[in-house]
Amino acid sequence: MSLGDAEIWLIIALVAVGTFLIRFSFIGLIGDRQMPELVLRLLRYTPVAVIPGLVAPLVVWPEATGGSLDPVRIIAAAATLGVGLWSKSMMASIFAGAIVFYGLGALLA
Image (cartoon, rainbow, N blue to C red; front, side, top):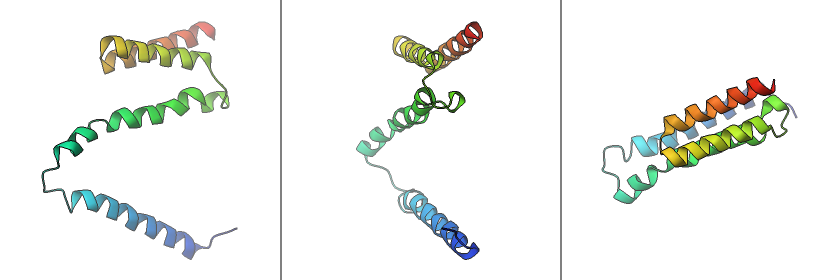
């Protein structure tokens, strides 16, 4: 199935309008009001929910290995998680994961 230029531009315009309306609903309609305490408390968990969703596919099905499991990535992810739970420091966990990832990569290469 091939789409013509008119259909593609219509899809682009509809997506643009949809994106605008979603953002406007928060910024334009309720942007000047105080949000309820429950909403503010729940919004604090957004990064905790989004970041693992972005990182997990890169660890479990990495494109660099053709989608197969890579022990170096699994061990680096485990080190990142372990250091993060132990230290409660995001930067320490990131550095630990990077050191393990690049260190094991250099040792096994």
